[in-house]
Structures are given as structure tokens and as C-alpha cells.
Length: 297
Image (tube, rainbow, N blue to C red):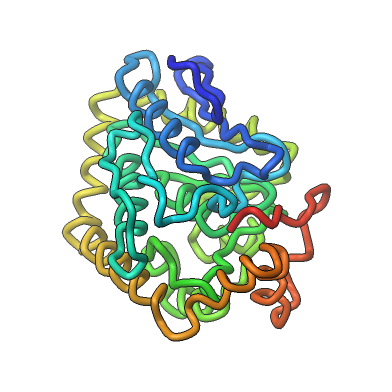
């Protein structure tokens, strides 16, 4: 495997583990981190001894969202060359390169021949939910906090996955409020597969990966492809592409720059307090977990 900066990789029995490794930033999704995740998945795709991939986070959270502390969006290409994605160069937010870039990356997980299990604990917010949800399966700690708060004041979701993973009414509730669910609630609505005490999460997830690995690789790959094709016929790719277009429009709506203005003038923490204060949440952390850094989401 390559020498990665922001992730850890290992193989155990017939499964591989990719660990997001920016614990000091609650695994905020930098451009480099996402590129390394995609690269590692491709490497494990070529490894015949690996039948299932587990994606997890180090430290106190799976991921608190995209890293908002890096280079301004009009000054970077978003892409490390290892991701296999084209750079987009300087952009205007209304043109939609950002959500289209994200979607192109996450389709790489969908298109892998091998199943990917997201192992979620602590906070899983905003971009973190997109990464976890685009995996084939999600195992989650009972007390995890999962949600998409940016819809409160920043933009609509980059990846419109909610209607594909839960009842329409629940999808609307979460998208209209930016509210979060616990791990137990995520399972109840169909967003995640199984919830368990956090101390059991690693053992149960790895045991299930080995259970899947009992299926021979060609059969497993054909089954994943079969399920993918059904959802593609139903329109999942088109709906997410349209959702990305709408996200771009939401970013240039009147008032769409207020969060950014507050962040520039008063700091990101002030902007987050402005966004989430009326809802009186997201200051309540899972046990043993501090509020997400003001450099994420």
C-alpha cells in the first residue's frame, strides 16, 4: 500500500480496514483524506485476498464533516491526483463543480466490486454522512450522532441520499430541519443496518465482514452489481445528479453567503452558533465526545 498521510490501512483475515486518521480534527474530510480513501479502496479492489472493506474513523468520531479550514473553494482543484478524478480549477459556486466533484468521488465506492461497510461512532455529520451513506452497509454505535446541519443556513445537501434510505416523511423532516438522529434511530428509519454499544462496534462489524466473506468473490461481486443496477434503473444516479445541480443553486440564493460572511468576520465558531443556536442542539455531544471542531461541517 501507499504511504498515506491521513488514513491508516490494514488487512485482517479476509477483510481490509481503512481508518480516517485526523483525530485532532475529528476526521474532517480534507481533499487529501478523501483522495487517499479512494486510492486505498482501489488498491484493495485489486487484492484478491480482500473480500470486504471496512471504513471507520480514529479517535472520537467517524467524521464531523468537510474540512472548512483549508484553501478557499475558488483557489483549489479539490483533487489529489491519486483520487483518479479530474481537477476543476477555480470555480464559481453556482456552477456546481463542488457537488459534482463530490458525487464523482462517491460513485467510486458504489462502483467497487467489493462491499464496503461504514463503521460509525461519535459524530457523523454533513460530509461525513455522505461518505458513510454511500458505503454498501452501515454499522453504527447506539449513541452516535448522525445528521446534516448545513441545510439550516448554508446549502442544500451535496448528495441527496435521504429519500433512498428512509421513508419520504422522515427524509423531509431531516432535510427541512437539519436535525440529527442517534444510531438507534438511524437503524429504526432504515438509514443504518445495525446499532450496538460502541464498545462492541469493532468486533461486531469485523465479524459481519467475515460472514460476508464466506461468499465466493465472483458471486459477491455479481450480487453487488445486481443490487446496484436495480437502483440505477430506479433513477438513483439521475436523482443525485439533479440534486447536485440544486445544491449549486442553493449556494447562490439571496442570503446564501451569510454563513460565510459571519465566518470571515467573526470566526467559524460564531457562524456555527448563528446557524445552530435557534435549534439548541449540536452542543450536546455523545458520551465522551466533545462538540465538533469549528473547522468542520
